[in-house]
Length: 72
Length: 146
Image (cartoon, rainbow over all chains, first blue to last red; front, side, top):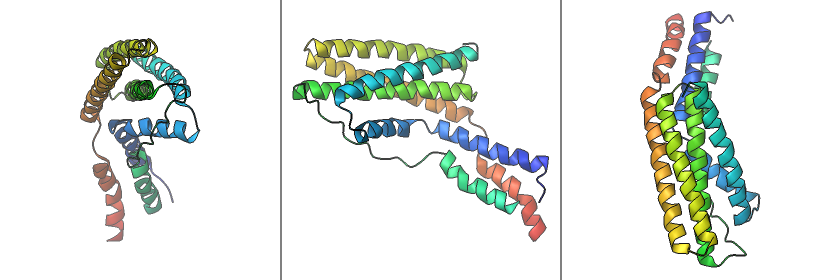
């Protein structure tokens, strides 16, 4: 079967919208997954605190880079 | 064509996010008194909220779903809350548990507000719903069959 450019475009639009919907939903589940991952890994509370510092530093850097990339 | 549409339809719930999962309890500290341990849990959770909020701004900005100027404003706000969380940690280490707890809880709430505001802004700028695209895409197949 042949996929025409129009069909391909529509499929891509659907996938892009799905990704946008995931973002629009927010990352609240990520928060839970991260905590659960720490608990499952058997980290102590103090280790979790240190781990979080690293995660915050990375996500902050990613946000800063994204904003700078858009001229803000 | 139908196979592709079925695959696409099956992928959408995955792309749109999984259902909420329950959060597991953080362990108690083995070296801190219970009050301090509870405060540290609050700090860890607030940092995690901060991590999620920064990530959200990064993702939404990269997808052109967030006005970068507004994104930068929220980023600066989050930086302020991050500094106050560091202050909460200092208070905890100094043994000022009540102040540290208040500071951590307050920051967690404020970070969540920024995150919620960013989500609302992104929802407003998100494009047309997939059902419309999906219905439009499947329409020729209906015509072909019926």
